[in-house]
Image 1 (cartoon, rainbow, N blue to C red):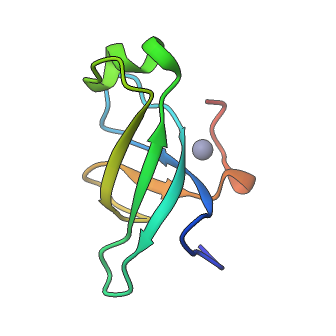
Image 2 (image 1 turned 180 degrees about the vertical axis):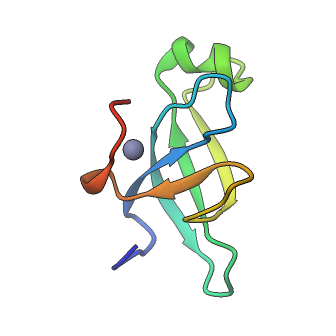
Image 3 (image 1 turned 90 degrees about the vertical axis):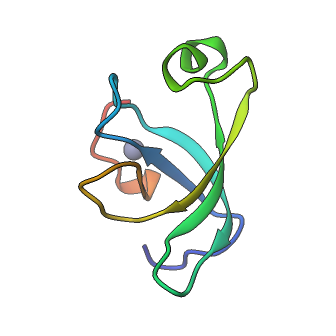
Length: 85
Ligand SMILES: [Zn+2]
């Protein structure tokens, strides 16, 4: 993703989740060694907490999220998001 720096907003999505969904997140660290990003993910209140193991917190920390992967969560630019949610 071009221009990726701390403070950018991205979507984080896990296609392996029971109900895959884009979640907004703010990038807090960009790893320049191929380990993706760390980000603070914003949950949709208790709606998301039921599905991602949250305990009522409105944010969670996501670490070493790659831009592409077949194995778990990835991030992408919300301006080019191809998903409805
Ligand atoms: Zn998205």
